[in-house]
Length: 415
Image (cartoon, rainbow, N blue to C red; front, side):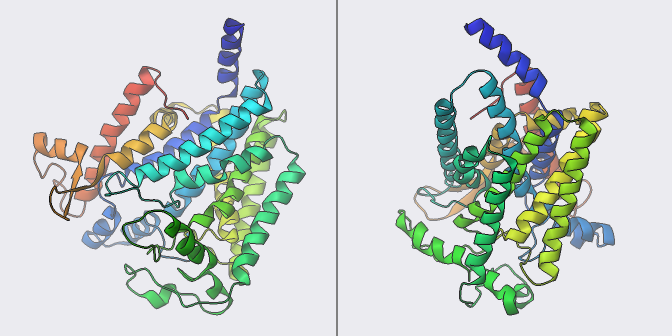
């Protein structure tokens, strides 16, 4: 029986592996590697070499302060979207292997708890005590994971109704909440430029229901000092609308696993992606709902989810339909060990307390090693403007080689 199950697992693994999904996941992780040592390299590059190109890079390699969207703002939605796609494949395979609903539900609950605690752990690595916050992408995945599982194998109609109810309900929560005074991010150069007026003021930074929920909820946990606000405006309740993009991913995964032709699947993904992007833009420009990633507005869910659909549609057509696959290898190496690489990115850099003092010092393990062997100025040969970027690239290559070593030995970290 065990041998037969193993053979079936290998058969399902080869049949159900979606190379375009691994490629997409790897592409997103490579973007994260670009900030593995020094976030802000894009600003240094633009200041040292101002041009339309470096200005464009500066914008799209940064999170927008509040309203709007850049390429960098699509990283977290991409992760959430791919969780939904992966669930369709993962539990579809387990169902074929004969797993019961109860065992799969227990697995979903355990996976959700691990994701939540992993997110807390990663944000606590360099703090004096447990940092109970829940806005990290890993934690947000965990908070919505069980709800997503309960929608798995439900009809498309039920999934669409649930998605609509989540987005409309979350919109109403903010829209009917009394307008409060915004508390801008201290890092903003021009705070008033990013503070909404009129109806959009219901979604201002640290002046919305998500902010006030965290002022109550996060202070239920032991803390060094009471929680007042998240300077950048992130909040725990964002897992509710981000569950919407996970549902979009789940429906996408079921579409790709269906019996239709590959060309029809590609058209479906492209059409629904375009509709999502257009709907998010329309809601923003007609004044119904702003595009704000840090508050995960319903409009941003549709807009970013639409882009995720378009990106996966393009990769699916190129990689899985047209079989143009050679170029994907560096990204697949990252994508097939996404949890391991994400943890390495977090754990390889941070602030450690100096014993006996309240001071902190920063150490990047890989960067410190490269400086020791190659000199402190190992990445400065193109000037100060390029040095942070080259440091990120050099350190990213080292982390990629670790993933490549794991890939060659078929070591894949799974939850």
